[in-house]
Image (cartoon, rainbow, N blue to C red; front, side):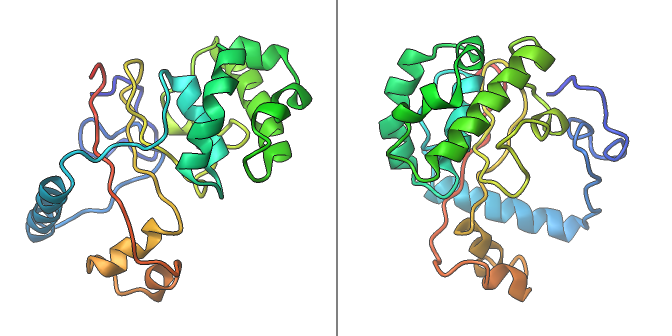
Amino acid sequence: MSSTKPHPKGKDNPRGLRDLPFGLPEVTPAEKRRAKRIADALDEHYPDAHCELVYSNPHELLIATILSAQSTDAGVNKATPALFKKFKSPADFAASSPEEIEPYIKTIGLYRNKAKAIHSAMTSVVEDFGGEVPSNMDDLLTLRGVAARRPMSCWATPSTSMSGCRWTRTSSACPGGWGWSTSRRWTQSSSRSTCWPFSRVSAGA
């Protein structure tokens, strides 16, 4: 459970979710039961669901997430081993330059912009957060390359209780497909119907 100070906009949320920078909608008991049935079905059919990005610590996950925008996880996973071997910490990235990062990610689309985003984000991590990736959404969203509409991987690391779900144009089709919403905003936002869930992992797991 998160020990982060409650966010003013999320202070009335259920316990453990009060650090979210927005208020959660009220739901009826029937809606809660339906949500549980959906969650149980996902657990049954996808018991081994996990984040496909390969990482070993929070800053590697953050960088892999930045790289994954408009790219495949497989492509990111091919590039990151050499990248993380060269730059082992946020400080290493901050002490480098975008031009030094570029050769390690040239196989990934938009690599020049992503190199700038990685360098800027890691510099902020070092200068503003003591070298530790922040564990709340407000602070994360201050980092270049991280935005609410960018693909976000599950935050599930030993150092943070924050967790989330990867949300892409593909998974935007899910609410309509599962009957959560009949809005055309959901059903027309992706040309593909495939989606994949990610399991929530508690801090310290």
